Amino acid sequence: MRWASWVRRDDGAVGHAGGLMRRRGLPRAGRVRAVRRSFPAFSPTAPQVRAAGTGRPGPGTRPGRRGGPGHWFDHFKWCLVRAAVTMAGSGEAGGADMVLEVRRLHLASLRGVDGLEWPVHGFVVTHPGGAVLVDTGVGGPQEWLDDWRVVNRSVADALAGLDMTPGDIDLVINTHLHFDHCGQNAVFPHAAFYVQRAELDRARRESPELYDWFGFAGARFELLDGDADILPGLSVIATPGHTAGHQCVVARSAAGAADLMIGDAAYTPRLYAGPADGKLPPGQASDPAAWRRSLGRIHAVSPARVHFCHHTDVVHG
Ligand SMILES: [Zn+2]
Image 1 (cartoon, protein in one colour):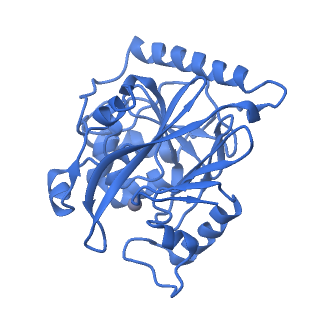
Image 2 (cartoon, rainbow, N blue to C red):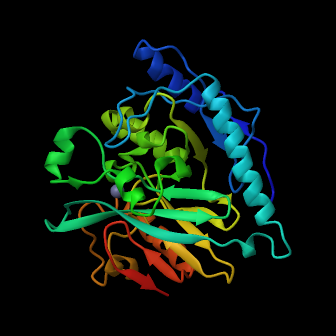
């Protein structure tokens, strides 16, 4: 596995983040780091990363404000996790001998675009060095929850069902930044959030209220530009279409079989198979042409199992 140096933006994201903080009368608190395409990275020498926000938590554990020595402890802990994973994945078979296990969390139900009740799932991917959470469930302004008739569940309670706590999650991947996928990010103030740069830009532009919600004070974003390896055996593929910066998560086991967490790249197995009439339900694609291209990329992965955020079936390849 190759390790990359950090590529730090000196404009763009940094300017945006700082600018928003300044507009809100808050001190400029740090920089948003960017991860170079296809390379995971962590640098203990990189500065702390923050994004602007109100500090409002999602449901569940109330996070404290970040900063100070605690961050360096987090960095140290994360170094150990990454080291453990690297060692575990550096044997004869490289990352292929990693044992990754995908477990589903039921995080909420809400009224779907067809008027029926839909589940909201997150996924825990456990590996020898720790655990990764894919999407954090529903959270946001109360009127949004009312509009979508959300029956919510604390992600901390859901994790307890797996005999885990939020502290066991070292890293969060948001497939995208809709309120039912990042709403409880604030339950994990110690974790780094891996998102596509294009998605953070979209959310900042289109949903400033939600951006304030998930971009709580001290939130650390690792910005990705396209496909990226996150850990040995764990990667993301860029799948724009549902939103501009949507990504799917792929976990490969020892035999090479892939579990694909599809996020909202397809709401249902039928949409994953490809809608016969070519019609898409409302909200499925903000850019239908990009959505179709991304669906082709997903099929090219030939996943052994596809896990849906809003459907209970698991499609076996
Ligand atoms: Zn969505």
